[in-house]
Length: 590
Image 1 (tube, rainbow, N blue to C red):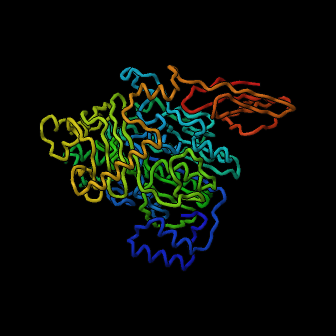
Image 2: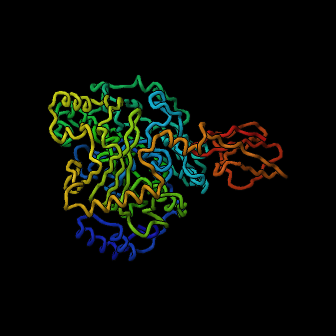
Image 3: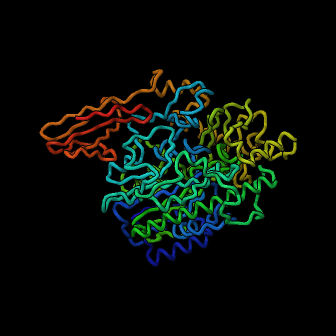
């Protein structure tokens, strides 16, 4: 949908209404464009603000996506005023690889970002700490926006499977906020909400921040009382927990979970956490309206992957990959549209650039679905991968079209279930294990605990949304199996993914054969007649700098060097270089 054609003329609005009536509000991009082609041109801001509202471990558990268990007034408002995308899929069933895909526009399994926790569990794996190493020309999309003059903030979770370079954000902290930008400067801001994380299902009741932190964003005079390490002290009993729905609510329990009191309690927690998150979304939207920026801002709401429950998070069934996406445009343009096209997290970065009129770089593996450079055709397939989770390794790849999911298991001799200790803190997981040991799980619930896996799996997600009936050996589906098998081979080759490659070999590849993590070469600063030039011998290095005036005051954040600049006679320059996956250089002053 071309953003420069979002306001509809009366004729276009009538045509859109006809399409919605015929299609039952399930509208493809091509149908929307038929209407938009007849619409009166309406210019958005040439450089709109972009706000991403990101929650964790979030399946389609909200009214806008068909689940009316819990009331979410703020998200429902966003959906009513925006476009709903029910077919958004993460590239992994867990947060860090998925966030790498979002921020880079690249598949994590192709850049060394797919093993969950590359700087942890080294005693178990025997591996050194390492980070993903994308191609030398690759940049975080936030850095690319900074280079276009945007004020970029992240509050406050990063978790990209690499250390973010200091050039990546103007500010990334618990106080980061668009309110700290320069006057009239456009912004790109991410606000992360932690309420819906799987740890919110633990006993005691998860790790809520008792203070609703989003009311204090941007207020540097506010003093945190319960931040950081004190989270552990901030666990709540159920008696202290805000209750947004009765505990005796009747839930639709997915067939892969047993219907027991503990599971129902976890379902209650899940929805209760969503309601708390919705309140925080409302707080941020209120700030945007108070600042008079709502109608100059394109708002995205999404989760960082699918749901938090057992057999959801970490797995690459739809329950682990599918997450809601809502996009609200200024002045409620295209309000109430439902767009069913397939979307992947790798599409976010190119779409972000396209929305501000910048052509996405060729290294990005996603395709823009909005803006000036939106792709000509809709996506045919989404792809996903699962490798190591904490101390346990598997190797699984998936490809899905609009209906069918193909899964290839590279370790068929290994059972599906991985005994991840963190997940086993969830009462529903403990209940599954208890009933497994007692032999009381039914066939659907037992599948996850099989001692081996088929090499290939094929599911018809339209009739089997929980992916329980493997069709890979059914003669009626051999053509579809062949199609998706071929597409997976093509994708793996294109992104350079080698499934089941020993992680030690992967690290050697990322480090170009070195046994130690590469280091970014220190910057070289040249000052001639007050003009500063900075360079680095590391290919693709991002160069950050700060100008220190005669008063000795050092700026808080690093500017990105793009071309020579002038300084005053008594000014000094501090510079540091970064490349994603490398150790940053030492800072140099001149």
